[in-house]
Length: 366
Image (tube, rainbow, N blue to C red; front, side, top):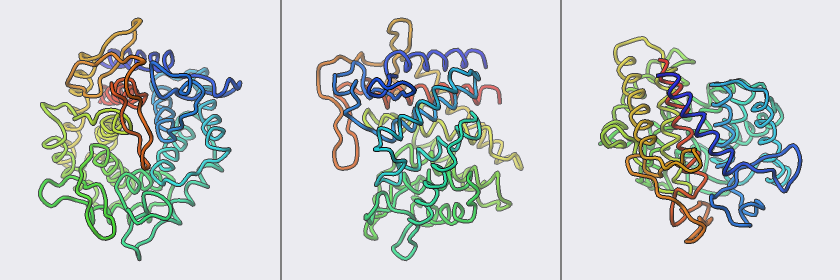
């Protein structure tokens, strides 16, 4: 079973390498993911910059290095990090706290698990999150600078990072804020955020994922039993409301292409990392593992095969659609990237498929 998922994850990695990974502007010692396949000239020239998609590409490379350590991949991780900073105007930071949180998570894992360490970047990003905490304004940290929207997609991953970066007290404050402010009393799912004091009631798969990740990290790092209890409640809610026949729901392409993959990543964390202190812990781990493996099997069966390599569907319970160079492209609108006409064209969708294969490999041995 383990080897099966290792092979599938390796195929997913190879597909991204072949279709998407290129040098940044032809510069040696760099690489980034081209955001579409088939790509336009603008895509190939990296005229389009989706900071957080590249952070997830980096995170997936770390997953792959964990699965199958290779000196060449370690170099690829370093190239990806170098190019990220170059393309982001020689900076680690931008105006979006969620973007920075995803990069911080990937950089922290690259250091801890792949021996590619960027201590100055981690310190700089940590300061961004610590300084953005504004309980007096009703937060949380905001979604972006000079904004009054406090949401799970910023607070969740930033707090996971802070827990791993030894800022446990703040990570716990953030988890309490999320639990008090954004949990739906009816379904126990995580709402999107709070804006000017009003609840934004949308419920996205990746919001569930990051809160699961945070509560799992805190359950493993503190003596407070509350965190494990929150994991139990949320895993059950996800199984009931965010999956159909055990397959995690898709959210199309663009930024949404990553949402189901992120939930799979953090369900895998629950399955491998939640301390086993009770039968409730065991049940949550089992459910999380089952959601990952059922989703991964569906995604694999519904893939297309191009030149022997997988092309994943945006919706893991449906057959993937073959993208073409024609049709509407993904566009950046008001702080988010909407989908290409055929969502499978978007790098985000393919990264999520790869993320899911790595998650399945991580839990298959459990």
